[in-house]
Image (cartoon, rainbow, N blue to C red; front, top):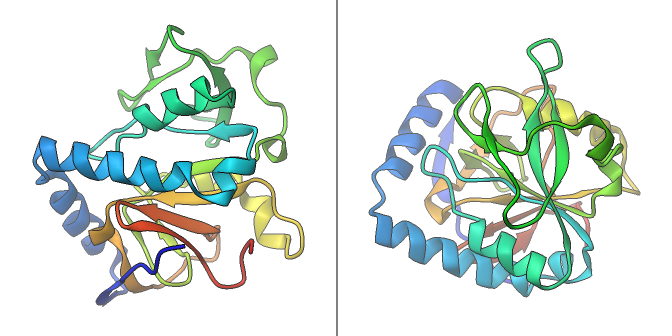
Length: 211
């Protein structure tokens, strides 16, 4: 396990922090983004949570996020069952997870992010059927509190995990560039903390989460 270093920054203004880190993420050169994404994938592939997982949810990159596509393909080639998130309707602001295989059709959602077509009979049915979920983020702190893009989709989808102390499934692993780590985020009451974090520097588990 790596020891990751968090930036000495504490900001209660979530919007300002989101703007700052999204700008820093967008400023990354393509070669640097690709290098960091490959390094992150290398660490995830060797983490115990990935090795013991059979059903893993990924995401496709947007807004300068870490590119998990090489990791997604490697997992599929290793025989893992792979899933991608699909937005619910405007009246259903949460995520569904659809199975993915290479060559599957993908369609843009209302934010322009590619996702599998939502076919009700093919989704997982229950989120706890997933073993590992790789979660995008804008910022994360030492306690595993996550700042996302502001839509609240992951928090609503995994809200039930806030009440589980001894049994948590799936394992939520944040994925980010190392500069997205900060000392402290003021959590909102609805925030669902992450269990671990992967960056180009390594993978770390948060205190009090899955050992």
